[in-house]
Length: 311
Image (cartoon, rainbow, N blue to C red; front, side, top):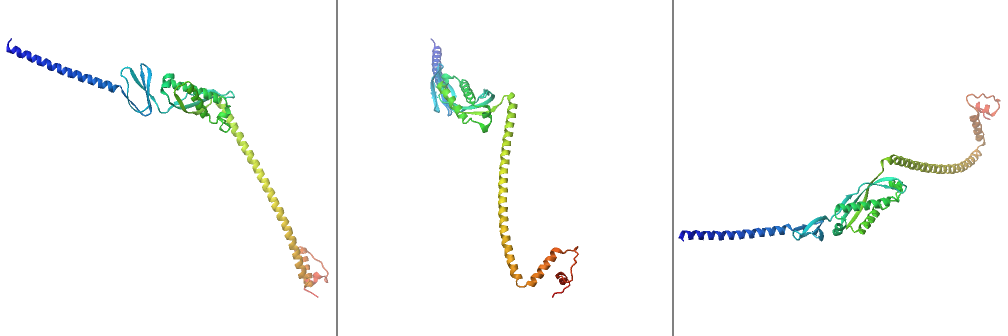
């Protein structure tokens, strides 16, 4: 074998060795990258306000509640998320019958949350199914509660005996949910509005108007009665005041007249002639006016006084 052939053979051997070395290194890098991606793809993060449900072949094997990093077994385990925070559900509008056999439409909403994800998944399977069961219980309890009240008690706040209806409904719905172990709890149930079937609206409006008019008439009657009472009391007090004033005036007048008579007597007794003149002039004042014609004897006291003659 020539020297050139030997050199070529050695070259090919060296090249094959280097290729095999690089191939093994590339395969090692690929395996390492695959393992890294496998680990990364099976790490999951639990956030605040959520549950992570780990399933193995469809069965729940673990519920992760605390925030942080967690790991699942590749290929055989899967992870789903459920909310931990409160949820609001708008209950479908429903028609109920009152105690006095009248119909009305009720619209509610509920605030609820998951407290046991495993029970919820086991018995309700999904959030939609859990909400459906909750809605059925709410409708059943609301219908039973309002069915114990008359129509007027529900629509008329002044006569309402509903009391803490929302609290009672919430408590009874939670009892039913706990009994069937759905793993959820209702925080609050609220009645958004109560409407009437269209055919009942006119009759109810007419009744409400009639009740308001009756109430207004009752207020007017009470006002008139109070006015008459106050007027009568005032008139009575005025009469009493006037009677007392008149009595006091009579006493004062009598005392004044007595005092005046005493003064007259004392004054006139000091000069009888002046008293006679004064009484005569008083008589003139009462009997003589511009149309009076007087015929008197010349020797009468009047003639003497008018003529200016005094004895």
